[in-house]
Image (cartoon, rainbow, N blue to C red; front, side, top):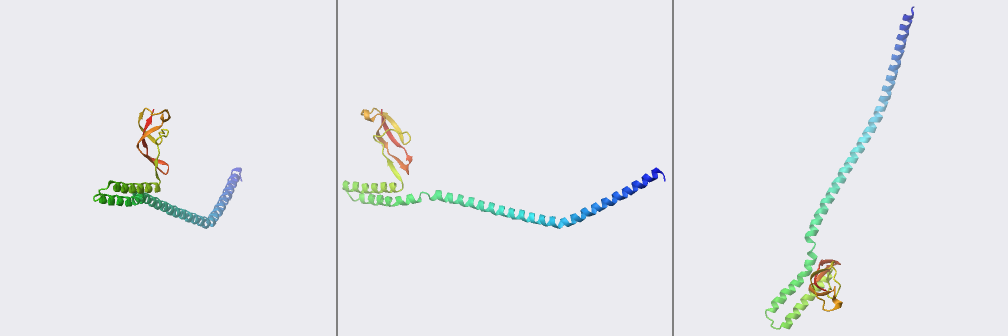
Amino acid sequence: MSTNDNNTVEETTNSAQEEAIKNEVKENAEEQTAQKMPEEAEKEKDLQAKINELNDRYLRLYSEFDNYRKRTAKERIELSKTAGEDILKSFLPIVDDFERGIKMNETISDVKTINEGFQLIYNKLKTTLVQKGVEPMESIGKEFDADIHEAITNIPAPSDELKGKIVDEVEKGYSLHGKVIRFAKVIVGN
């Protein structure tokens, strides 16, 4: 045989061996894949189940939050509608007293009795306001404070002691639990 023939036989043998090795590797890979398939399929099912569970939890949580948001918005609207109910109920007896006083004033000619009746109603109103946290602010003779007073005008101070202080009060100021709800309108001495 010639060298060329030997090379051809050798190449054919090498090709056949390579082909056999490739087939064997391919078969081994297919066997491993076939063995891994059920394990991977099971892992995939487990992962899909976890994904479904998390999605379900997310949807439930989202729905729960949405219901909470709607409920609190409804409660807030309801609260704003009825917030003054308690205060208004406390003023109804005072209105009743005024109505009785007006009715009685038609037949009474004594001014002193009328004044006493209105003084009683006024005291009842003041007491009700204090119970609800509304308090009048005392201003006359105190230093002017722009945080709680509104200066209407300045006048010459009657004495040196009243310079920069409040000489007169045009309209009384009120606070509710320490917060000013109406500024006192005052006249300040210069």
